[in-house]
Length: 364
Image (cartoon, rainbow, N blue to C red; front, top):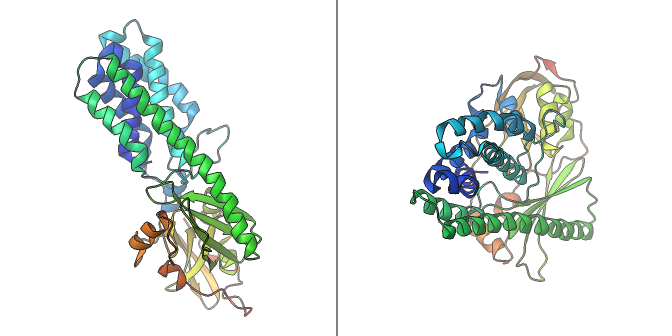
């Protein structure tokens, strides 16, 4: 989730737990800092951009690590604030709650969070909320500002913080329920088109939980459909794009591709771009401008020469006409997405561009 949301979540949690002991302002500031700590892993240098991508939200987001850190940081709070001298357990609980709620909130987005490292190393990414969602953040922001403006504590502030946390948590629950409904609707749409996907994934649309992107994965292709809670009886378009498993086979033996396939749960596509083999994570961003795209090999004479993994930053956040299209779909009006109506055609039955195994160096 975005940094502001994490700060105000931590601030609200800490204010509710520690506010009566140290005052609203101090508690909110402490919680905001604690709620930001797990994301400091962005400062850890990684060997290549693929490692930076897949290992962000790693051990710093583990609930087991948080349990180990809570006594240490809690003791620091006890020594810092006189009001906590007789509330050591409460201080430790506040630390754990601020750290763990950060990780749990991140896990509700699609990116992937290693909540149970090292016992269960696979990332958890529900996808029921977008990385930035004002409806989640605003109640917490309001009570955080309220707490920062008060040095003392009051019952009214306590009730306000509790209500804000209840509303934001209920909104997360709402997202999970709607996600399940949207996936079920999408499966009906795909079945009507004769599509029998291997996997289906519903992901909350940008800044809202009304419009959803649903991806259906097949071996040769993937299909996108965009559904809104406000949709009428009109049929919705399904956009089909190639995944190019023939190209993916060229780098399937590389460490970089293996990490991307593991982290993305297989929601990948490969393509040739300017003489390079580029692999994209289909979960984040929209066709063709995905947020995380990596060049893993040079393509020469039908063979792949491995290169150190490079992140392709040529994507745009929004394609032509996407602003109007997004608003139309959120409000349930039929609209075609121009960027997906002009995508690359599915490969014909001709010879593979690259059937040779990975040659040269190993990516990343």
